[in-house]
Length: 133
Image 1 (cartoon, rainbow, N blue to C red):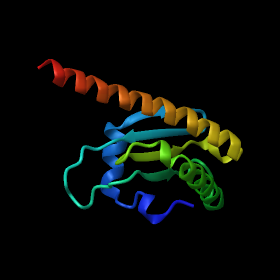
Image 2 (cartoon, rainbow, N blue to C red):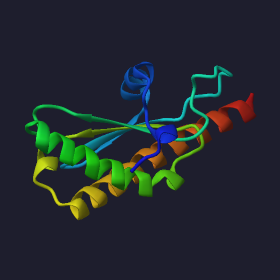
Image 3 (cartoon, helix red, strand yellow):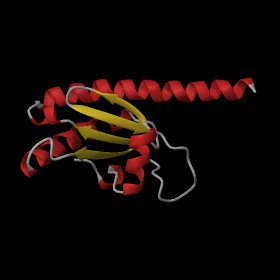
């Protein structure tokens, strides 16, 4: 289970992460990853936080909660691979309802690797642009 410190509880971080974060998808889920710049505000996370979006399209309440529990467990195991103040939103697709935990884990790894590669690529581009000025 994710500790409270690693859960995305602030609704104000969901929308910017989904809109402006790096997105990568698979058959069962879509991840949105944002590494916000430190602003000094106490509400901004200082460690990685993870939030989940599981809509009614995935299934009934029991199925949605099962999917959320499995995703929480899988995300906890992958926290160390996230940058310090990263915000990760995992959105489950309808196929997640019938996927095994192993399939969800493989899809989460694949999507997270792609999102991290894109995010790190942007950071490198920004650093290179600043160095040439």
